[in-house]
Amino acid sequence: MKKEKSSRRKKLHRKWIYKYRLVVLNEDTFEEHLSFKLNRLNVFVVGSLLSVFLIAVTTVIIAFTPLREYIPGYSSVKLKREATELTERTDSLVAVLKANDAYMASVKKVLTGDIKPYDLNKDSLESNTGINDVNFDFETNKADSLLRVEVAQEDRYNFSGAAENTMNFVLFSPVTGSISSEFNPKDKHYAVDIVATANAPVKAVADGRVIFAEWTVETGYVMLIEHLNGLISVYKHNKSLTKTQGDFVKTGEVIGTVGNTGELTTGPHLHFELWNNGYAIDPTTFIDFN
Image (cartoon, rainbow, N blue to C red):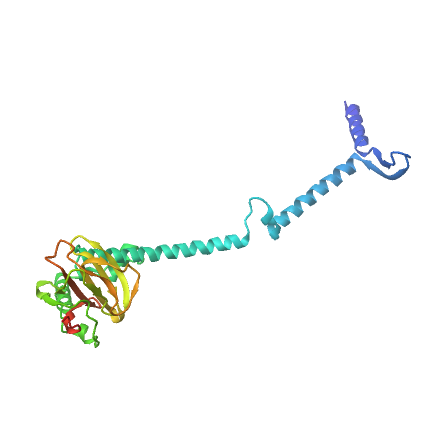
């Protein structure tokens, strides 16, 4: 048995190291040009080393050179960077759009009467958009809460206070006509109703930007214009509007026409309001409607 194993090993050894000669001949003259002495072991070793070399070179090309961009399945570094930047910008735009949508939704609620004007504040917008998720737990007592409500109510509707004192300019008249209903905070009528001819032009009282221009059930076509110094003018019961949300308007520019739209109207007129930093003010203090 040992002799047979030894004989097999010797034959295998001779088989691997048995030399062959590779000759390159001219087919016509049989002249020898090249010749190589080879054996199976040399061919195997050289083939293995060549395979390892090719694998290593391919790995280096894929890992450390831009040539990998031409290999199917690999994207460029520039493309990845641009995709990351676009993703970050998209997230920022989504947050801004959510905040704007929450703001416009709150404005619509004020116009339709779903909430009171003093319920619209920054805290409610942050809670709706999720911008500020930090929860603060302040302990208060009943007396403190009642005092805060009383002071807030008295200060907000103190129409002879700082709200009017911060405004020292005259505004352009939106329409010309007689006042049928005056500014009366006690009856919660924070506007003046000006009787005017149907289809008469309604004009902007000052330069500004339209922040709301839509139809509401109770007050028909409504427009809100944001001006400088925290001033907002409101125009209700219009027959039509010539501006849309986001438009910029100049003083005296036509923004709509007098109408009789909405459920809360008794004839062609303009329901006009002025708000300064969240406080309703008497428009007749700054505008001559005659």
